[in-house]
Image (spheres, rainbow, N blue to C red):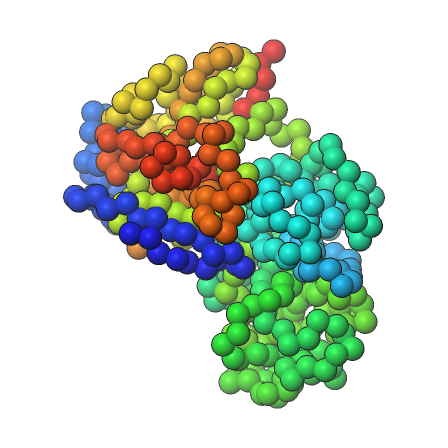
Length: 454
């Protein structure tokens, strides 16, 4: 069964693998959690050992003010001008990334490099979406500095290396304003999308009030422009919008049309706007470029689809060949929904998928929001040069039927997806595994990070 979903501006194909008897497990009390793990995951372990895998579901919380504005906090990146190019998505993504580093670091990242050196095989004037930005950044293809690849000159040099490594990306769910605000307040700006009926500060707009720098669209049009949420005002008057709004409240958004637009490039978008807050991303885990020596990956286009077994639980494994004597230190993968739980394992000296049957998980955790996460292994695993090893994840995402993120070779981006660079397997029960590249035309979104051993 195939179902088309829309995420950002790309059509994503979700493949649901029907498997009779695929079981769910729900977690309520600690005792129930332990019993669930014993029954469905690693029945050979003792109860005492299993308690080590009990999931800590502590949630991030913050007491939010009525008004919050990065401009007053010294956390707003510089307003820039995309000119006539279809690059709002690149400007919004990298501006959001820059805010995550402020006020400690003030960096200007290259929009040209993101537009020219992502893996989607698209021309820079064809537009894009935050899905492309997430893939580019989590693959360590960037960011690079603006001074090394200036914007708008139609030239983007080869061989530039990322100056930062993005290790965590948060994607607040559709219209989850609490999550959006909390992310802005604690971490960095949130890229989001709008439908706009004009593309130049001088053009007329039915929905933009130039006197109040306010915007509200309540129609059915799909988004066509990306901005960065840098604050909010819960009491912003509904009467300040051209068409009025059902109630007060607005997000403070930074645009990429230069300082001639709005209040020096910033404007207010009503909470009641149709599209604001539907598609969201924030780059909240940014580390130095020397954090790991090695990155194993096969999903340069990132999360383009999902696979599963009509159940909120599934397991997946990527097999890699060690390029030297190394310590495997961390996994990188997506939570495709909120309140996701995971369990991790590494299988060394891998020779055949049958070795994944009954894999013993050694670490567990909880992810509050959808997004991309890097999870450090509590006990790094040593591999030798030429040794094949499997990184294994079991995931449970409430209400999901396809909880595993994949790079899918759909009709839209099939030419950009190379299926010969990965060896991935998926399972409904940790016993029967199937080859995802062969059976589902997909690469698993499961990266592995390591360090070279001296």
